[in-house]
Image (tube, rainbow, N blue to C red; front, side, top):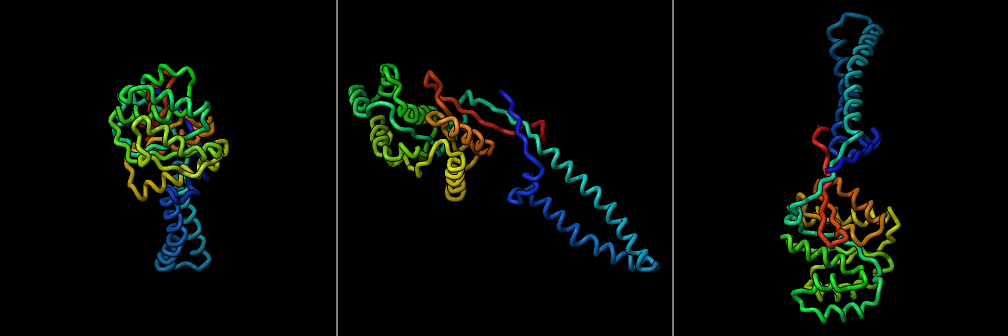
Length: 275
């Protein structure tokens, strides 16, 4: 288990009212400035037989005294959350795999002739294609990685409902070829859904497309804890960085195949000693 630290500024934390923390701070501050001074003024003016200027001075002093604890509370809150330690944990028993309903994969251009690879595959019995094809292939054909990942997940107990392909701009034209290729390993076309192709070095485009898909899945499919997996095997370094960052969301994990084509799943979660 390894630890990674990230940093968020108070502006990022408190300025984003879409988070629960931001909402709490916004409501607290609004109540204080909108309600507290007037209420305090009514109390002071009702019970203290002083001149108006003295009442106003007392109101000012009491407001400052009340504001200080609130300011300190907000500062403490921001300090607590600005540096959060995350654990990167490997799913050695592949328990996450059994939960996975949806998978996001990348797709690059084929790095050798597809016709030759298809010919090799058809010469291998269907029940042994994954293992024998990987062992006997002299060239590391990049499309075998996502196919192998899906088969490994299914073998580990995953009941995949849909595999979303986020192709590169250049590989978008090869989606049909990839589906034909995957079909040779028993993966039906209905299992896959292709997204719009993006430049893999375009950080903003990658984040936008993946975030939009995650939002859609949460709204329409109601994905739960660790039911979404993002594969970083076939993507570029930028693709991997974006996918890894998105797994700070507790409902998402990442996966890849190592050099031995073994399935690896990692989950990034906040360290318990932060809370």
